[in-house]
Length: 209
Image 1: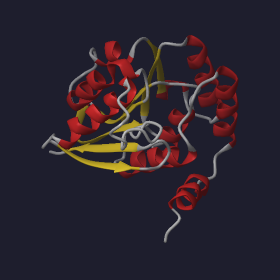
Image 2: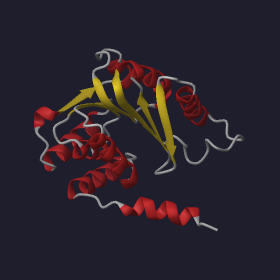
Image 3: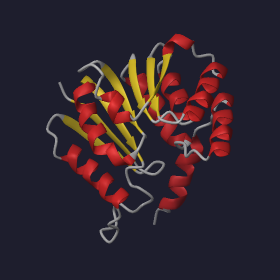
Image 4: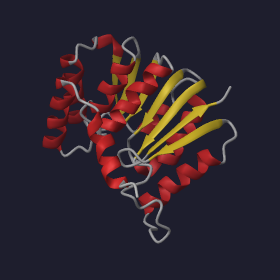
């Protein structure tokens, strides 16, 4: 029988990280910020590269770990990164500078993700990564459907939420939110969707033409 835990661990340890990412992780640890795993980051880079992303929204800047992966996958992209914590944003700006990303390629925006996203232009973005507050995640998902161009991709980490989502006995608010998000995409004819067990679960949905 295949050892699923060993396979998951192998996947998580497969990707090497740059010095800039390692330093950003250290800052995250100091600030108590949870970052995407290396495997999730690698998926973000591959997605950004594969679709040739030029305009990216990141809801939840953290200390810049996910942003570094997104920009590594598409070096000419413009990243709009949203967060409510100025200290996190300051750390992310340091990380972007250390990675050699041009200042005019990143827009670090202060505010709640849903409030900022609601003022962004329709069908103007190639890739949207949603890792901000869970309280408005369902609203963020619906805004993403509006903001993405055809062929664009929305990515939601923590989609299995601590392995609680598959367990019907788990009924806490966070678990219910992720179940609702999964159900939303499963019922959408306008998206093709995949769910991966990497990290804490990764939902990937591409908007059909």
